[in-house]
Amino acid sequence: MYYLEQLVAARDAAGDREVVVVCDFDGTITTADSDVTMNAMAKAVGYDSSFSQARDELYREYAPALEQAAEGERAALERKWWNGQMAQFLRYPIPPEAYTDALTNLHFELRPEAAELLRYCEENDVPVFIVSAGLGNLIIPILAWSGLLSPNLRVLSNFVRYDGEKAVSYTAPVTPSNKRTHLQMELSAFDHYIAVVYGDKEEDLDLLPPEISVPVKAR
Image 1 (tube, rainbow, N blue to C red):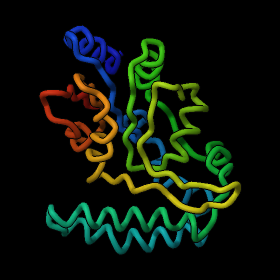
Image 2: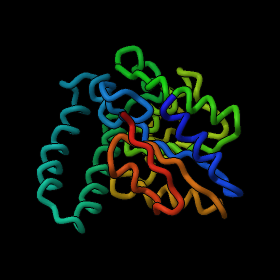
Image 3: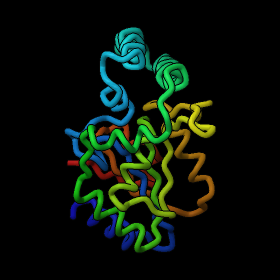
Image 4: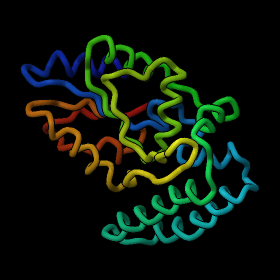
């Protein structure tokens, strides 16, 4: 009930402002011990595959650099790393049906309070924006499999684009550093609103100015 209680309280206090929900996905909608969507296809296709080995090389290149980077350098490094990760889906093609098929071998469990929240939002026409630096091609089937994919929900994440069975491109990267930019572009359509923001990390809760947001930490 914790997630839903926070939303209901915000709606009661919102006055004439529209209330929207903003959620991280990995560790916020899913449990803390679930697989991480950006990394999960490496597990699905096998850690000894060329796809997974190429991703490991990127990790070895960028993870240490990010730990040592100054604040102003992080965004550019993350963008390069995420572009590199997404490029592997074109270099070592994974068919579009592989994401749904992979769910049988991956561990994704939704937090009960998150499922309750999303059902409430659908029933009460509350707009939901899932903002994730993970992999949208997995997020969508996870939500669909759980019966939680609805017209009021928008997923802002990293997507591989397909032409038939062939991966041909990918969307502009959504990284931990630029989630705020992607979200603010979507919310520009709202004139007078307050956002209830759910996340398992402090960086997830700081996507919007405090005067228009209610942060809710996953626990």
